[in-house]
Image (cartoon, rainbow, N blue to C red; front, top):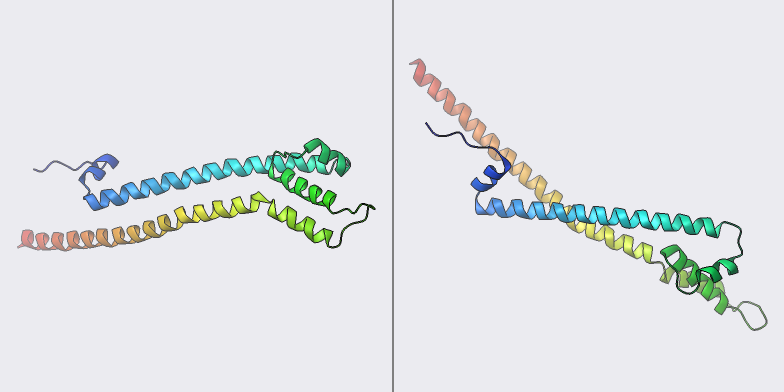
Length: 172
């Protein structure tokens, strides 16, 4: 009598063909990469939200903007402070000698803050990398799962038919 097959993950992997082993390894690697991106971006976004909350409290505290600008200085710590410093720097450069504003100062201030806004670019890059990892993993998981279901259904249908044939043989 043939020994029963082990159904541990390692035993199933060991019995698989080289193609199936390669696919399994690729799926595990994609999963690890996906979770690494998820964890890394979760930590980065939590840090960005915390920094933004701290800056928001300072910004809305009622302190004069010039005082906040002087306190932060030319070397801001986080993205919110960088946007603020970019806007305040352009604000300072937009004044004439007589104290009036140079024409189109508002649009230049807006542009300078948009250019120095790293959060949006990082978020878009993170989303793109996440999709790069997730889409192939989902597509191949669904494809392989569907193929696996079809193969197993074929085995089950064969086993049922074979059992019926053997049952007829035993009955005759």
